[in-house]
Image (cartoon, rainbow, N blue to C red; front, side, top):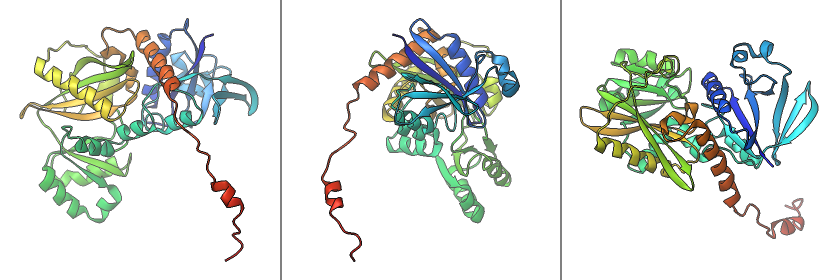
Length: 373
């Protein structure tokens, strides 16, 4: 009997649109001979929707008008059931065997959805709650990297409310510890959204104000001016960690922006990478994957400082765009999807943790009289 695989995408995230693209790509290559595909779209309002034409990419620019026969859906906590309703009336219940998460950014990639699937006892394709939360939060991620002596660019963590109260103190810290120019990033955001380069003290305040629209916790890093950017992915396959090919990001601008990533045509330029640098990137990818206890496909982004020849881990993406299938040159997208599902199902079956412990606490509690002082 074929397993039911929930494909989940969208969500209340600035990466909502990219999540749709990832899901549509994945569903186009889904192995329907092996699994039943159940697509569920999370709207910008946070509600879960099912419709007859979810595979039509044209409906998402005006979902309410173009989606056909819309129903709402939700998980039944404590079971593995997807409950489907129409006009708030129960229609059917579908047992879900596995969840393929194509969600990016907040709500989908930060551990929130992962926690929901844990409560519903449904195995899923990404890293666990803890790993996703740490990877999504740039400040916590860098704290972990520092603690494990993984090279990363020098930084300061700033709370915007505190900064507003003591601007001079923070400006002095930035100028002395990092030195200008610096790059300013919202701590919990992806796809290069909300990032500003700040070249002097005069522009620092405006850059901080801009970033604070996205997150009150802000990461301020030393800006590496002469650099190359590389991407490498890892995933579990047959019980071992498989490392992908390396992609050099071809970009002439100072920041690789959201538009560069998703709205410009890729030229797929083949760039030769020196053997020693290639080995460092792959070794660090494997090490970071292990340190953060990752599962599924994770893409690690690197910055290479050309001036001092230093390689830095820039960030982790626990659910990368297009599930980073393009980095695994020896695998098709269908192979990557099948691997995610099989590894996730096998991993769940191997878990045999104690989840309840019987004690005498309730018996003792029954005999206590709290009315007495």
